[in-house]
Length: 82
Image (cartoon, rainbow, N blue to C red; front, side):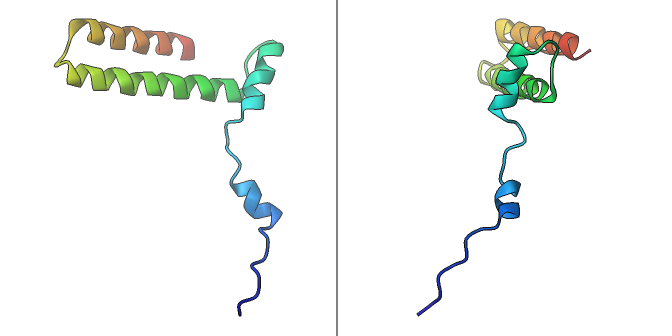
């Protein structure tokens, strides 16, 4: 018979915490300016948008509307990050 497994230590559970937390993003709504959590959430959202639009450009064989949307989203992201 095997002994019971030891419970995980607090340092092991701390390693599993996500780097982007929802409370940071929600707290940024009520404080002036931006914080690192909001910038990360915005960047990840734009990266997902770029991936989706790039897939659509490939799937539609270069549809002009999708290419324009991709160009506009890249320009918007660049102007926000600048």
